[in-house]
Length: 190
Image 1: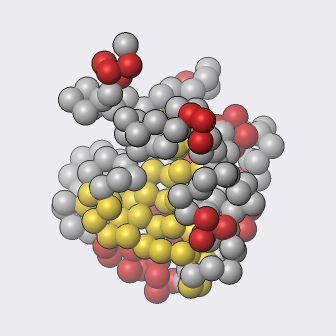
Image 2 (image 1 turned 135 degrees about the vertical axis):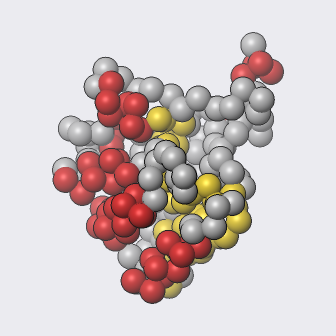
């Protein structure tokens, strides 16, 4: 797996200050994609142990809220294989709650229904292991006609922010991530 970019101190792709990994490779090719340069699987540099170690080290400071993974498309089969062990390392190192907790967010052009167990893009154990590490999945392709600059952490209205642990636990459907009401734009829509 290659990566196109790593951003430190990113505030656009999840809550708080984050380290953001942009993986290379995407077959979706959404029209007006903001990161078309990352469609090529060979773009960027190899994602190796040294890069993984450096990202984990970048998550150590208390002011870093977590890791965000974008693309390209993180859930392409090749990228799932390259990410699963790394995401498990991050999750093993940083708890979801308590002192030193960090969250893991992932952005995918595939929907929850496609990625969940039994879905067309679920590769079985690898996909399930990735989903187990995530706190929030921002799902669905960017759709220009649904573009809305008032949305937090997503580009188009069709994209959902999914609370992955709650959704997996419920077994009854998607549980959406609840934004901080101070920052929510829902009152502007009502």
